[in-house]
Length: 191
Image (cartoon, rainbow, N blue to C red):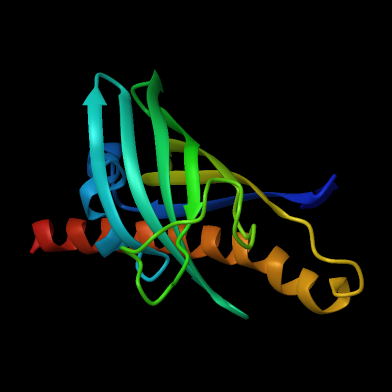
């Protein structure tokens, strides 16, 4: 679902994936491995690191890469809070605290635009993850809300389908990749 707001667009997507034959104890370490997000979620994540960790609260850095009709790189910081609902149900809420577009996508370590400037392909990002162990596996749900700049008048017919498809495709790839990595690790232990 996409919603227009003054000078921006809110993208709201929810997706679920089932990982058969695994437990939460196999899924959660993969999802909480913030230092390896770049390995697990490439090409969308090209750098990642845990900045701090205290109890159920994490601060992380992600360098995000998007290529559709143009290539953009973002440096982004997030506050992530984990919680247990029951021993079979966990959640994670991730809220961006800073998203800054890199000026030259060919030099991702280079200078950034000030926060809120640049092309506006991503201004804010919030993700709500839910994990439930049942039916001999784990259900993983991710709900993503992102804020982007509005499309200039007259170009909506061309750009809107591309801009609105990026968040949905990224969410589906992230869930699919999470499932694949958990299954790879589970199979490696089982062999």
